[in-house]
Length: 173
Image (cartoon, rainbow, N blue to C red; front, side, top):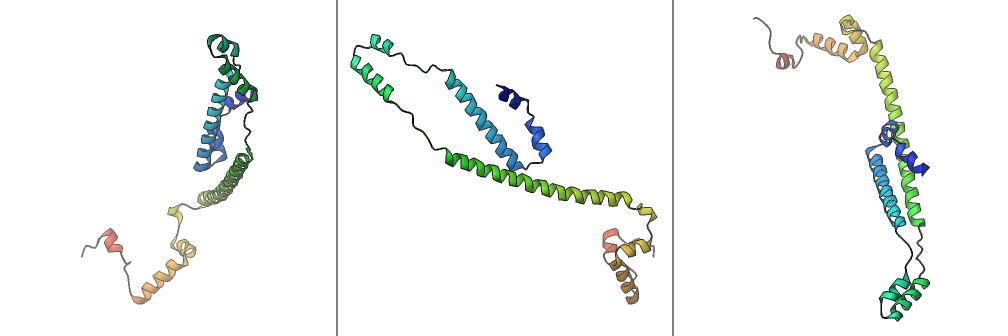
């Protein structure tokens, strides 16, 4: 009973979100939990049912006592079939291994992404405001811009290709 109380107290949505599990993993875990809860419910209803057969009642009700004797003989000889659940356990272990591998892979991806985001955030916080940048700063950051401007000046081009199409012609002449 303590395990049922503990299972009821667990907030699985918080666990799923805090572990950063993928949608497939969360869906598989939720499906497993649902099947488990259904099996527990069925087991509890079956456990509540009586398991004894009152054969004397049937002997008093039925005229043909041989039928009751045959039923009693079959009932005493009955042996439940045992199933080899090794294959199911192996499938569960395989699923568990895949789930753990997927969770580890997701955690590794998240760690790498978090490092990149922290580096980007630090870069943004350390960057100078746009208003304080000079042409030399932009040229040092991207030397291709400086090369393109020098090439255009050598060829005598004083307009930027595509500027008029994008912003229109603002000349007064």
